[in-house]
Image 1 (cartoon, rainbow, N blue to C red):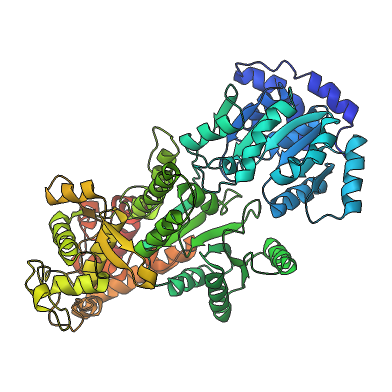
Image 2 (image 1 turned 90 degrees about the horizontal axis):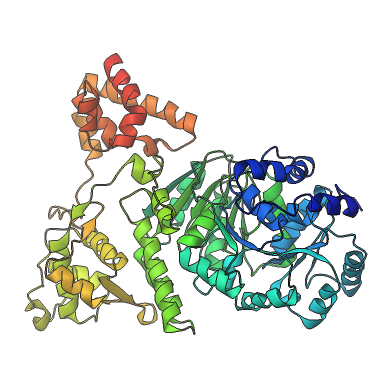
Length: 637
């Protein structure tokens, strides 16, 4: 057996930490964990533990059960792998996916650890060989699915073996409040009776307070220690933007602006995954599709290609990613938004696992939210569960469409206190101005009420503008007909999106022809009474009656033409500076400053930081980061 310690050596070492102090003071942790640190160095090649790993490992080595919530990339697996090597007996790991088990087992074997898995892909001879090795004490870890573990024959054989621990990986799957609930995980609470005296560890990357309580209850960890690390991922720069249509053209732009980098793109359907992968491939991107509808051998082949490539893009459904430990993923793009903040943080967290700068970009729209709510409504679950899941959907879209730091919002969602802004998400770098649109919202809500929820958003916008084709006399007589001529059609659509995000309007699917109706009654009443403010991230686009669609003409070209000779030289110098800065950061130039902002700087020629701060598009974050460099370009030109 190729293992770093013989089983006798492991037993002797484990006795040395059997009285691990309950108070876990730092000095005690350091002294008692010396054998664990030695395995960390010799087997896994790391010099020091990260985050709360030492505390969790110490708790299990003491023979006590625990629950640990550690961020994606935080080394959760070491929390049960190292104790399995130190404590006498077999480490039993419950894992939800064959791909996840296979990845971890292969990684352990590469490190010289005797690990195996039992799943449906194994032949009878292979299964028999694994059991023989386990019974002879030749295995350090054995991975099983919850269904495989809880079979009577499997439990009977395990009862005859000494167990070092039982670890429940991806423990959020046990909770009906979690984002990936799996009923078969509920059976695992019986393990407390089946293996009394064996320490049990529940680990996950994403669980809010309610989910953690559910995990503790279901797995019978009531009196066990709970370790919840910070959810901070300082290497991740987050951004989100409303999408137009399916958003595939925008995804193509984002990927082409990041050449030579590995990335993951999540799409909400198999068809969307295939189409997006084909589109990117046609544009010269080394992109592959991955979803459950593909042949298993093809999926495995593509996964291997992705893991081995220095630069590859995997376009996938959420069937991909759990347990895939590719450290150099530089971006994760959600072409369709995830199901909840828990799912968002887990999926975004697959970027930057090496600790180097990475990006998480999400495209979203009100239609996505409506689809998510319809999906929840179609599930055969208790009303209370539906209410919680609906709230989680709205919390996600509130974060995506909000005006405050994204990373801070996520960390607060998971219960962290004293959280500071990250300083690098799109909202920190360019804080949007919140505009009070309550009066316009009252008009839209009144129009929906008077139309009786019988029309879609296009007809609603036409009604507000007074442009309904072949309008019936009864509709034209309504007080809301033509009451919204201050905004363009696009402006009203943006505001309607906001009202949908806020739950003040709802969208009935109506067999593919969605109808707009009023949302939460109390919220609508509060807006009518002026007791609730409707804030939007940007003022709705004004109506320009001189253009056919009612949208204002683009002003950038006109503004450029208005620049005098010297100002145009400065504008070109600013663009050259921006291009170099973007190249250094490996980001698109417009992320730093839009042309409109550079045009304003060139024409106004600010002399100091105060003047620069007054220009639209220069927020505090960008002023701090680029202020002196921009002012130098102005002075030099």
